[in-house]
Image (cartoon, rainbow, N blue to C red; front, side, top):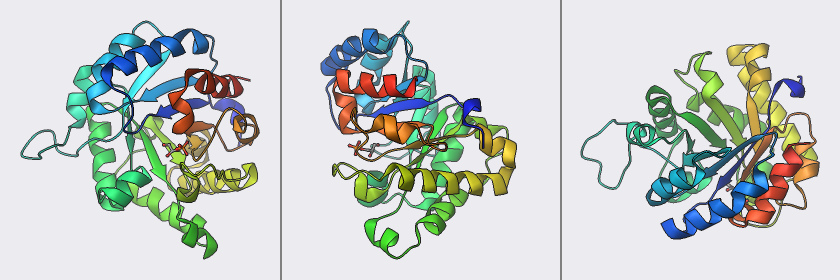
Amino acid sequence: MNKTLRKAVIAGNWKMNKTPAETTALINEMKPLVANADCGVIVCVPFVDLCAALEAAKGSNISVGAQNCHWEKSGAFTGEISAFTLKEMGVEYVIIGHSERRTYFGDTDVTVNKRVRAALDAGLTVILCVGEYLEQREQGITAELVAMQTKIALGGVSKDELSRIIIAYEPVWAIGTGRTATADQANEVCASIRATVAALYGADAANALTIQYGGSMNAGNAAELLAKPDVDGGLIGGASLKAPDFAKIVEAASK
Ligand SMILES: O=C[C@H](O)COP(=O)(O)O
């Protein structure tokens, strides 16, 4: 697989952090620090911060994403937000299937697939998260599990639409724990995801797919992880909330 065909993408997942005013301040701090990036730069902010983020990011190389979307266009779904609403606002990306959604809010492989479908229909680009729990890694079923998550999530997604999919491999045991997968572990699973996608869509499509690693990636370990042949970027939680740290990861991805 030829990594040079793919541009790295660094996405910050702010999770449930930052108010609108804090969003404006953080993006304004980030803008000059990432202005020369030679990689995609995305910030995925809470729904209520999207307006502030879009306004602050205007004219910069920072793109804005949401952290979830519902699969229906509209209707009686209290507390949910549709992909079409996000698109109309000017949002370009949406994270779907994050393990925190799967663990705390009942997202399943099936609803992840429905959300992916809706996001693509609305014209968004999806950051699709897959990954295993520690027990599953210890059982030796990581590759199978991640392949299954990937296959179900991509059900009904065409080869053309795959160009609007980024997959983020996030081992659940490495999220917010400070315990990072080794670069070899991250690369091994990213490569297995690419093989799954190759079996579904062919080698060319798989070779063009951006596959990120997420799970305690930070300014100190990013370069080693990003140097691996199948790791094409990062989905960053904690370290994306500090502009200098996020900028260092972006710099590591730009080399
Ligand atoms: O979406 C981001 C991941 O959950 C990683 O979070 P973290 O960098 O805080 O471990």
